[in-house]
Amino acid sequence: MKKALFVVAANVLVLTFCNTAQAASASRADTYPNFRELAAHQAEGKDYRRVQRFPRGSRVAHIAIHGGAIEPPTTQLADAAAGGSYAFYSFEGLKSSGNRELHITSTRFDEPTALKLVAAVDYTVSWHAAAGAKATTYVGGRDKGLVSKVSAELRAAGFTVATSVPGKIAGVSTRNIANKNRRGMGVQLEISRGQREQFFAGGKLGRAWIENPANRTKAFYRYVAAVNRSLRTAGR
Image (cartoon, rainbow, N blue to C red; front, side, top):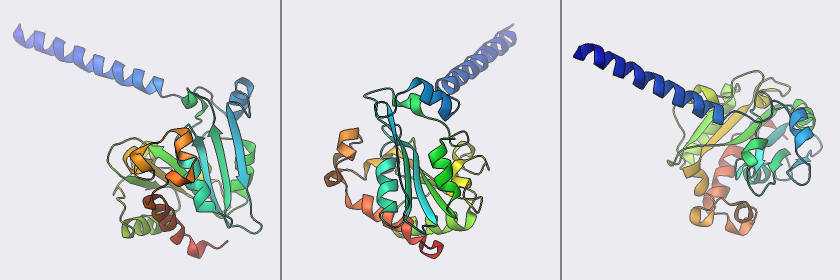
């Protein structure tokens, strides 16, 4: 009898865990399946904006498809990395709250401006925010050669790079926008919250705070410089 009760209790715990996990997964699901649906319900210039630069002859693009207040400070990192030499794209959340509903996962991000820009370059670095209090970067993507170079440069600059990348953020799908350049392979940087907090004075990641360059720390510039060193052979 006791054994039977134990089995029943165990099954209840398993079911509870599964239901909780499924609920958590559902809560993280994108509100919109593609850009067309998002644009039909959100106002450009009020809820979101699209920003791009494309210097003549650039073969490299730094992109932040979850920029602004969606995944701070990916816009600022991609923008600084691109500078005046590399192409830059950012889809930015501007809402005072609820910017998570503007998130379209990388494998379904089909905003036309972004697709056109990425298709015109040979190398892509897609900047993202990951969870975690520990300062860590997960370097993924299909461009294994560049993944190795970026990882090495970040470590040499004193940053922690994870030795393995969880499947959900590995960035290896051919449908991932990072891999839709002319070579069919790019790099996806998933930067933990602990690491991102080190890029700004006081560890603050509020929109107004990160938009002010005066609040950037030396770590911000050291990190961007390390990523760009790995791109030296990629050309401009």
